[in-house]
Length: 110
Image (cartoon, rainbow, N blue to C red; front, side):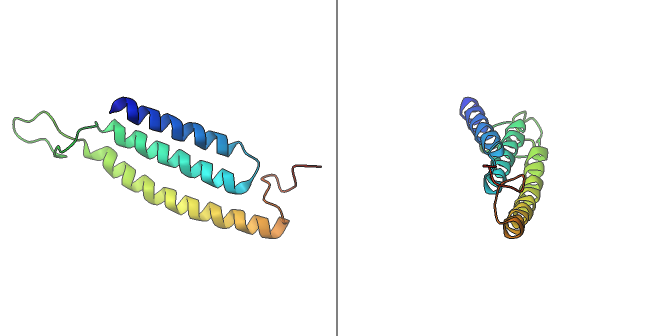
């Protein structure tokens, strides 16, 4: 399970970085979204990958799931959604004003 989670996190990170390096604003927004998904999975994996375990430590129990990374992931999801919505509106406004969706404000061909 840990190897699968590490592979998914690595794949999401690689795809996100690739899309960030593209020259179009919509792919940059998608790249940031993929990177935020990778960070969310990484934070969730930090709290132990235990299935069907309580999030609190009971008397005599040593197998538990840490609730702090779960709370961090919930907060990061909300912040990531707001950031993605803002960047989408910003990209649409830049496309309307400039007439192109290239990230530096001009076309790729001079």
